[in-house]
Amino acid sequence: MGRSAEVTRNLQAPRPEGRGNFKLRHYPALRLVDKVVAECRKLDPNLPAKLAIPLANRTLTPIELVKANALLEEVRSRLTALAGGDTDLLFAYRRKVFKELMYDERSKPAVRVRLKKLKRVKQAGLCAICVGPLPEKDSVLDRLHAVEGYTEENTRLICRDCDLRTQTERGFA
Image 1: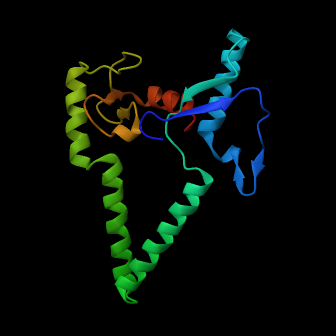
Image 2: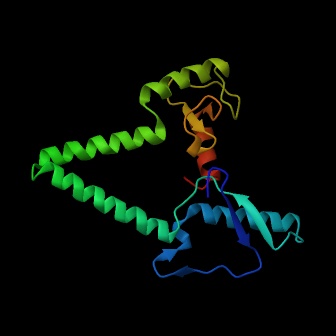
Image 3: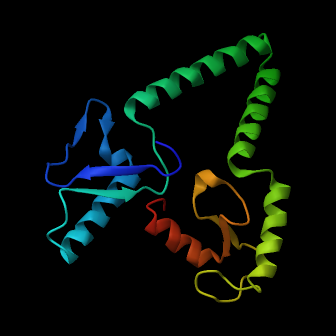
């Protein structure tokens, strides 16, 4: 699954409660899919047996999660070996790796600050959702599609209240 990943749910089959350690309740995006499907069924009971619904953010399958955890263990082991028993150095290595991985996902703070200023000007100081005035502080640079990063085309500047509502609608809050 790539950027345009979709989940196809079989709407006629009963939904399993879980297999082994994989429990669907741990995946908020799937709960959101179920809510959307239920609302669609109310509007049109004759929906096809399968319905494609885009997810806000892709989650790992149980097999991918096992692979990710194995990679994490390898990285931890290599960092420990690299530090050679020096706990302060191990801490510094962990912080550096963490920081760089966060930049990979969220961009560097200076990039986000510049983008926020640009969006404030382009939006005339108004929230992109409620069109109310944006506060000088605590406005939120919202990514429309998280995997596409912080770009001018993929972001909007919104107020805290609209951000909370948006995150709740997306199943993240």
